Length: 530
Image (cartoon, rainbow, N blue to C red; front, side):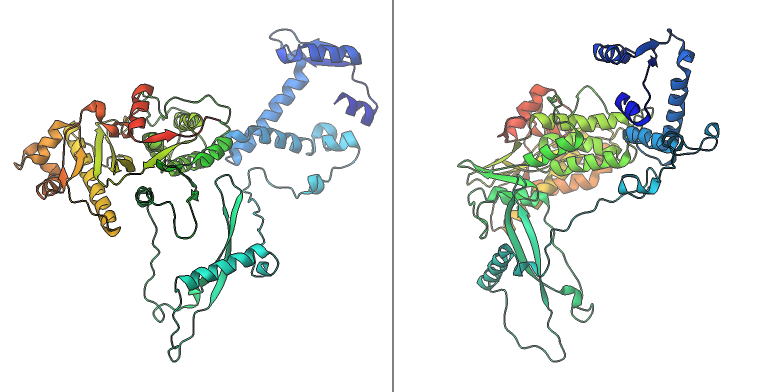
């Protein structure tokens, strides 16, 4: 700054006046002032009027900054950009003190051209902007230029012919054949590098007419629970179609060994740490503090709603392979409509926990056992907002964890036995669904499915055929569970609270109990923390 003033305006700075902030009293600044012959003057303590010009300009600048923030409803994280914008505008607006001239005009003797600043047209601060996504250049003529696309098209044609996709038939009178087109995509590995070029030949379904060519449409979408069941069944066979060993699927990394198949989302966690600025943070031992009950925090400061929802959304997808964060994610997702600072800190604690365990995932061990088991638990009146309880269950197929859930119940319960009973009903529904999936895969298991519960009252209600006034409001669940018990599909052995694996899905635990349950769930950490 001193060199610019001297070169551009031919003026030497003789004095530097400031307040008594410690930033102005350091060896570097003192040495510079001595070298340049500049006298440093400071105002007296509690006497800001001695530095009135700078104090007044600070007030003017901050007033403009607050106006920009409030008027455009911009989050506080853009405070620095708002200060720079206010400075930019003040320097270019006319002032009555300067005879209706702008500071830039007085300083440089010409009126600044705002439209040519940084070669960009001026925009209102806080306006919505859109990032331009550059095209990868995959058009219908790319196959004529890039040999990779030509090879991909040849492989697609070979696969279609090998699978007997087409059947030559006579075209009905008055009908037109449905055309087809090529769709080109690039498949990436877990580290972001290109794995292969993929070309797909698809039908032009948009040329068909509703009511003439078709009557209904259906798009099958696989649940992540189903995907994990398939992983368990594939623990014996690593080959999938003609693609070889599974390495990357929907953001999930797969690794193979003699033990079985291991799935994790290490790259997803690494990207999340970079996005949240937590790459150098101190790792947390657990995803949620067991000593803190998260409430609505109405007195707390509000945070950016979209940013909070985006962060929690990423954590929800991450919980598909991380049952250890399922309860914590379920907890922070309850405040998506009006997040406060306490909720954001709770979500960031999950990220801090992930910092210490980026490579933790689920190992599907190789075995021939196809037994179905489930653990159900509930945290009675755990929510401090509405006193609803949290249901948690996890199911095992052949000793391997395949599905889990942590969710707040939709009604307020009057006893711990009631919430445990509702959790049992949900666990039975999950077991029945898994049994149907296995039957579709032609895998049979005729023995009773075990449903472990740590509440003896709930187990007694399930086996007791007598109706009571205290349980008539859960009559549907009672008859449902009793029916499955009488048919021999389900058995409900008692498990102690110490061995209740679903406990991790209903409440925050200390680090020792947390790690003990994690090891029993079959989770392993194959990578060291970054």
